Image (cartoon, rainbow, N blue to C red; front, top):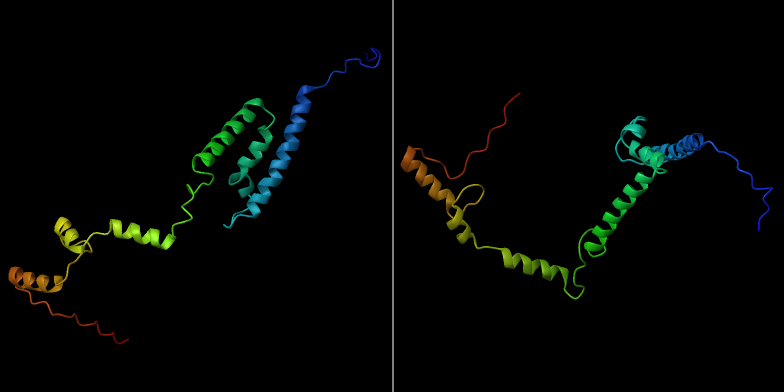
Length: 162
């Protein structure tokens, strides 16, 4: 057994220890925030340490509290679940290595491509979708309805003298 003489109770100030550790971890957060601010691609000012990446300072300053530890743990578990759910990468499940990517995309295009005649029948002409012979039909329709003779090719604007 340990000797009773050397184990006397020494009171410690819990508040000063908490403030001290918060200041140390907050300083570490400030340092990391400054590093993040200096590595941004945008041109940010010195205040960006607090305004743009200041959450790093807050995170490091509150890491000692139990609710913060639980919250960060919950957030990390959600990220890990999402990572696992998407097949081990955030871009989705891995594609079949046996299938050529070009052939796969061509098959998708053939599968989803509609003939222009079907599109024109369903939607009609206009909105950037025009069938063959549209200019002639337009020219005849304008001449018949409005009496305007539209030339086949439009003259290019002449450069103005300066």
